[in-house]
Image (cartoon, rainbow, N blue to C red):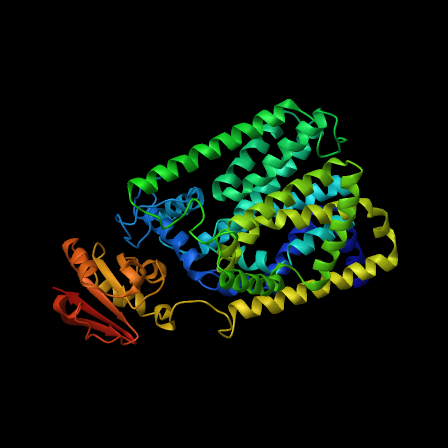
Length: 510
């Protein structure tokens, strides 16, 4: 009796992509133990930047208006600063006003966007390769890329930006298949959201416009995805113009509030032509280290093989190959300009996953008939299992046993911590957190505005900064890890001990 039921279930999966897609997403989420940390505050890779995003959402929860994005660290002007469009942070903040601050709401929203993008990538693959089996292979590769799977449920906007890029590209495909004006509007809107969330998402729309112009000039041949259509060029140009308007406003906003916290360009010494030999060497070492998180070595090998076939297609003037090479050129320029920044910010790579997956789509397109062979199917299944196992091993490094696990001191995760803060520090109080090298991690967990070690010049307590903070009405000093209280720049402003909790000591400022 069991066999017919099992056979019917397998038959249903083969006939219903939606069920199988959902099943694959659920299984991978289970393998990577998303349920274990779905309700945790920012942690793991790039705790700093995740905490910044969390801080934006908390400020919207407190009632900040959309066009006044703010973090908890006062920095230069009460924490008012901007970078990427805070659309997701604003939505989360408004939901929190109804539900209260719930970490899982932020993470679940991020995952919903991620899986929507994964679905768009799968549908795009089906349309371009004409092979569902090949498309499932691409999907499982996407869901086993360690860097994507680490950041997918995080607080960063990079994976959502990548996801909206896939949605935009899928809608472009639908429009090219005569699906009407709605698909064209969706293409422009999804690409716009992707670019607003992360500026480097502009590479693909620009490359598409360039390739369409080359098709119009009959320099290259059109393809299923890329056929010349003046309406597409107009729609993408409008999206690019809207993105430009946002970042022009950001520059004005950050200049007005004297904030260089979230840069709209590179820092001095980041471009490879400005970098010191030591920085160049250290960055290359980190890039080599990061390569373990891009893909398994098997996938990296396949992608390099795919790039060879893309080069051959480029010579034959195939539009999709020219698109990939144009995007590759943009990636090279981007990496050269932000070179040293990649050393400490591996999330910069997330949006660039467009490149390897376009290569995989092209490779599976030209070899789709091979997927009908039993030997190839068995090999593909073994690769999927290996890639999932490899991604699982990398995820273990970043979420368990404290290995490379960037997070705050355990004291901030104790159940009694929230009561300690709320009982002793009034909600509108301003606080100094020291020593504390993070801009917003501690302050956002405390949910109090103020300043961390990051806000002091050279990261040290000094007379000028202390006097400035006292004049601005700072009331409390949170001492972490039993830091020495003998600093002559601190002691004149230090009042009595208010309370202690584990390794934290809370003092009143005079």
